[in-house]
Amino acid sequence: MKKGFIVVEKYKDSSLFNTIHVELDSGESAAITLALEKDLPLIIDEKKV
Image 1 (cartoon, one colour):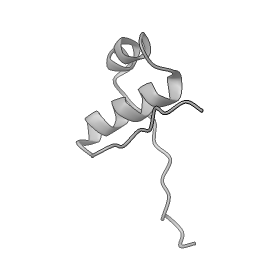
Image 2 (cartoon, rainbow, N blue to C red; image 1 turned 60 degrees about the vertical axis):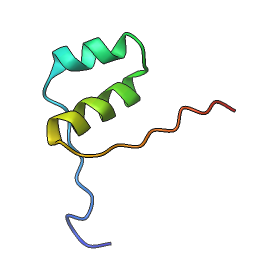
Image 3 (cartoon, rainbow, N blue to C red; image 1 turned 180 degrees about the vertical axis):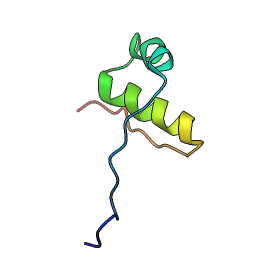
Image 4 (tube, rainbow, N blue to C red; image 1 turned 45 degrees about the vertical axis):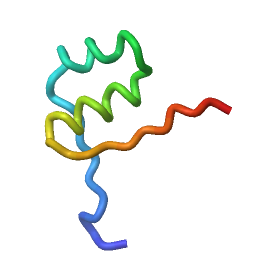
């Protein structure tokens, strides 16, 4: 794997995170918040087994 291929980032907008977190768990809320901040697409599978 090339150095810098994967970058770990944290969202900045805690207010948006907290709003989303009312309905979803922490991981999903963080992923959605970061995707919105970066204007990136996001696919989440909510299928429970």
